[in-house]
Structure formats: C-alpha cells, structure tokens
Image (cartoon, rainbow, N blue to C red):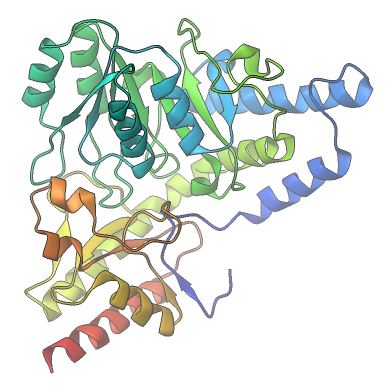
Length: 377
C-alpha cells in the first residue's frame, strides 16, 4: 500500500499481504486442475485439500465442512438458497448480500417466507423478538445473523442466539466475514450450522471465500456443473485463490495480535474527535465492537461529501458497506438502530487493519477536524 495514502477502509477490503501474493503467484505458475487424474492434477488436488484442512483447523471445524466459493456473497447465497427452506429470519442490520437475497425470495410466492428481526438502539438483536418470531414458525426454518456488523463493528452474541434457535428446532447461519481475523473465531463454540467467510477481508485474494457447513446438511448446488466440493458447489476451484486464502488464514494469529493496538488507536481517534465536537456520534459504541471499526456521524455533512473531502487529503474511508457497486447510499444499519434518515446520510466508516499506523489515525483526525471546522464557519 502506498504510504502517501492513509488507507482506512479495511472493512471494504484489506490489501493483500506480501506472503499471500507470493503464494498465489507460486500456485499460478505451477497450475493444475484438482479434478484431473494425472500427476499435475493430483498435485493440485493435494494443494486444495491441504488448504481445506488448514482453514478448518484454524476454525475448529472438520475439513469436509469447508465449501470453497467465489467469495462471501456466494457463501451467503448458498446458505440461504440451497436448503429448500420454509422460513428465513434475518436481522435488520445484515449485509446487503443477505438483505438482497431475502428481498428476492420474499418476492417469489413459491419460495420461503422471510421475516426481519429488529435490533435495539445499540445494534444488538432483540432476543425476545427473535424468540417470538421463531415461536410462530412451522416447517424448515433458517436464522441468519451477522457475527460482527460490517458498518458499526457491533458483535452479536451468536452462541446464545444459536442456542435459542436450536431449541426452537431451526437452523443457524452466521455471516462471520467481518469478524474473521479481528476476533477469535471458533465454529464449534459458536454452535452454528453454517458460517460464511471471505479471503480478502483478512489480507487474502479477492474472489474467494468459503461456507463452513455441517456435513449433515443437504446442500443443493446453485449452479449445475462437475460436482466439485463433494457435490455441494460446482465449478473448477480457484486453486491459486484458495491457496492464498489458506496463507492468509495462517497469518490470522498475527492479525489478532495487532487488534489490541488497533483498538487503542480507534479509541484514541474517537476520544480526540469527541473533545473537538459534542455533536459527533459513534454508532454502536455502547455494544461490544470489533476493535478496528467506527461508524461516525458528522451532522449536516453528507456522506459522499465527507468521502470526497477525505479522498482529497489522500485518506481512504467509505460511507458504509462497499459492496454495492460504488454507490453512496444511506445506511440501513443506522435506520435499523433507530437513527434518522438525516443521520444515515451523514455517516462514514473508519476501519483499520494489518498495515495501519498511528500516523494514519493522526491524519484522519486532522482531516476530520478540518472538515468539521468548515461546517461551523
């Protein structure tokens, strides 16, 4: 990453780690299709299965649970669309990929009944509301709740929610894409049936991810093909991307070690801005949050104006989720937490990562104060 640029958008994508780039290049040079039976194919198959095993071990899952995908969005699609469900329940603060899947399913009268579970003002799922919704459901039901929100960083108590869901006879999926590499992640301890991951959020390559799913789940591939991934996902595996994903997973302990520092820097940023302005709001601050993330309201300054102003200072931030074709739109997460549309249109997301420094934070604070001061003139 160019050090002239203060890159503060790690929740959108983390720059690929040098070790990952080397590994991807090595595998691409060697080549090979894991489905081929000759020696090159067998070598490719060995690389694929080693990656599967290494990722599973890091997550406390079994290798046969790991389904490699083209990214987190596909993993979410498989989770919600491949199980012939009668009901789907999602939280109001889910990632756009989950919300769009749910919206598309709700428009099809032949598909699942979709219901939204509310969150409180701190962004946490209302457990009593989820209990009530589940109590009224009959048939095969899936609950999908994000482990850590991509905009606010708010962390849900997935273990407790999973227990409730299973007591009601339903299945539990969690989108753990933002959580991975920022907090310890244990598939078995969370008690979920499925979990979505993405490589590029942890310094791996873009275009590769995984769905971790219990072997007992009958997953129908979304597209017809060659029956790869034990018949659960068709299409030739992205071998170089998967190897790069596994390398990034190998480096996760290093990322976790840096989280204390990033949390201190995030808190320092919030403290310095708060001293300068009594109008600023950090959404989700009263809940457990990812240590690298802050969703910041600067009243009366539109999100797109803030993004452009920071960009002119060579600082990269975003207005929230960066998975919607570059669109700047009001945050549905803020609305779900009870914030006004006006507030939702004036927030930006600050997110640190493996290559972030104190100097990056200093530059952000100075630029934020500069922009806010112009508003006050």
